[in-house]
Image 1 (cartoon, rainbow, N blue to C red):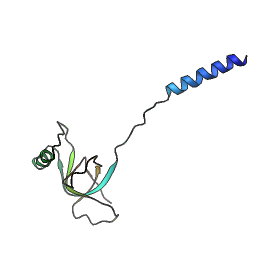
Image 2 (image 1 turned 90 degrees about the horizontal axis):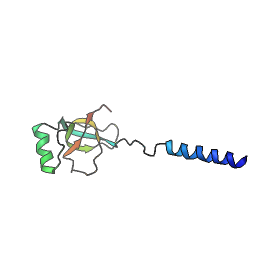
Image 3 (image 1 turned 120 degrees about the vertical axis):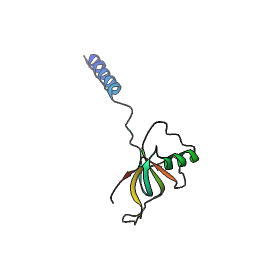
Length: 105
């Protein structure tokens, strides 16, 4: 009796383990930036900076922040456009930030 029960329980645990997703959706990290302007990636200004840095976005059109610097203190007087951008895997010397959405702090 107990051997049948243990087989059933083991089978249920194996089935449950197989049904649980093993990947967790990851949201890209974001950072607050102060940019001089935000333009479409298809614009001439963004195209020139992207080409200089060797970045090819293909046919993707996203908002791009130009001349950006991180905002590290709340209440920082930006003097430009306060944005929330995708945190870059590579720093581009403050020249550009990708996927920037204007925000109000």
